Image 1 (tube, rainbow, N blue to C red):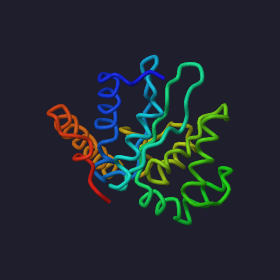
Image 2: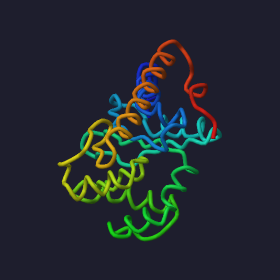
Image 3: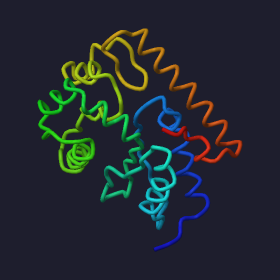
Length: 195
């Protein structure tokens, strides 16, 4: 396989720094982004590299889905301990069971989510709980089919609009700071807050 070029590495790293800033900063438990590698770039190797580099800081990087047609990848960056706490919440567990998930630990549930992303025709909107969205927002989105939300930002909120607005402002500020720091040469490992 071809070696990744410096530019493709930089592009993937830029995506990690900018799109996953709240997760790297330990403000949000997980982030998800779509990445289209350049032809011949071994993205699996890049994902494995950053997973190894960030794992000792409490961050996992993994590919949840690869499009067989375009090669685009859904990259999931998360904090396993924090995600495990969210998924262990009885209300979240009951919701996921209602959505057809078998009970299990975070890794087992992520495996089920990955299969749903790859094999289901409909998008699994329950992915919101895996991204740290409030359960009321995930349930509200599914029940209302994306309508009747109280505030719209990083996701559609169905609870307190002021709380959602504050949360989204915190994420935006974090992304701006990380984008500036990364562009100024701060390495990703230094941008990652240890668990």
